[in-house]
Length: 79
Image (cartoon, rainbow, N blue to C red; front, side):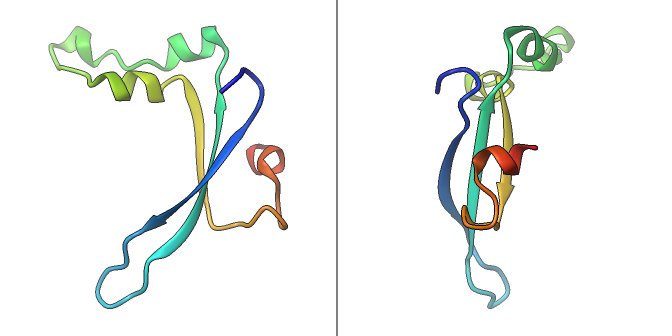
């Protein structure tokens, strides 16, 4: 995903206790290099193993919402 261009995907959270699944929209925006470096967990410094996926996720702002694009497009969702 290019810098400063939000991306969005639809997903579903499984239902629990007889409730139906919840349809959600995931909106993502890549952080600046400086912001991403500041967000990276320091768990490795404390002796923990950090999954590569976790380090990659630190490069993004991620919003999970039930709002449709008709209510708020990706840019509006991130504001």
